[in-house]
Length: 231
Image (cartoon, rainbow, N blue to C red; front, side, top):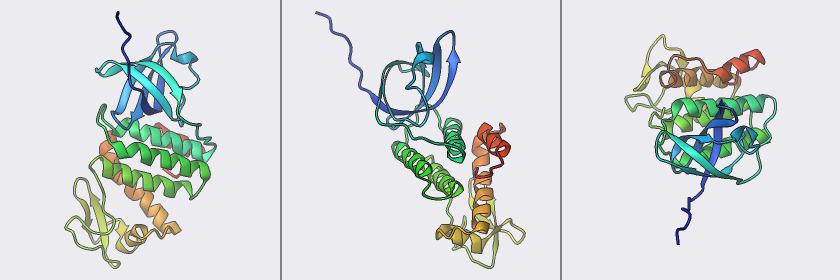
């Protein structure tokens, strides 16, 4: 007697969704096992679980660029992000969609993502500091890590000197560089005074820019329109 095929569920987060045909949606999912996965959810426009910031158990079929979603069940409660934290959550999701290649797994990233959402929801730190921690960890996990305690030649950053960021290399000595060695050392040590927070924002924008391509981030526009500057 024939038996129905069994599919093991994956723990996933919805990063992005867009309508497809009449009632379906195409979703980008973050999975520890498979990385970023795109899938069609038939009738997904009527599925209330397919929302961001909520862990889900998801089954899918297929191995191409576009899977077909099967069963969906909650794996926990959604993080209730509001106001500035909501913009930050949208920024995280957009960054992951833009920076991650499909089916390129980074198992630790899902844990980092969930911890970041939890920190945003709990308001443990100012949101810009939470984002800086996430950006640094994300770059490290996808192979573009940025050292904040030594330059591209392996030398310690010195307080009296200035540095510039060279894509693919790291921080280089430059007498007219935009980044102060003293402030970079403060960031590495976790001393998040106002000047360190401004420098960290500018530094991370430079570090991320080569990997984002020419298109601006929609979430940054939302921040600007709301009078925020965390991203």
